[in-house]
Image (cartoon, rainbow, N blue to C red; front, side, top):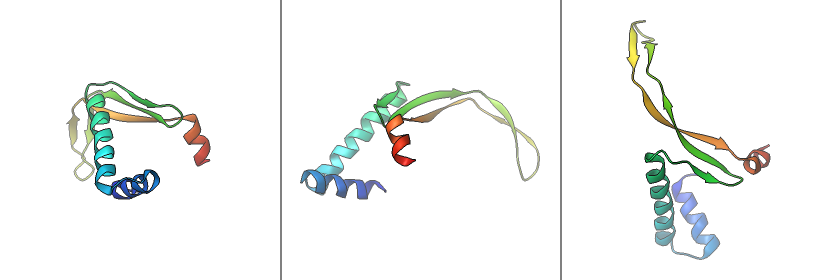
Length: 90
């Protein structure tokens, strides 16, 4: 499912216009992005938790040449699956 399919599904379920549904989904994604950019986790009970984790700098290899590369430290978004979602998938 992509964003447009989600917009259509939301508008059908709650009898909203596609524009209004798109605004709602856009706002939710904006709030998630803002929270994660401040390194604050976002949890949806039963669905899962989005969090930010720091990765250390490390040495990697260029697969083409075999030369060593410095890979800088950075932050990455992690997702932990909730119990209800895990059970629904299995």
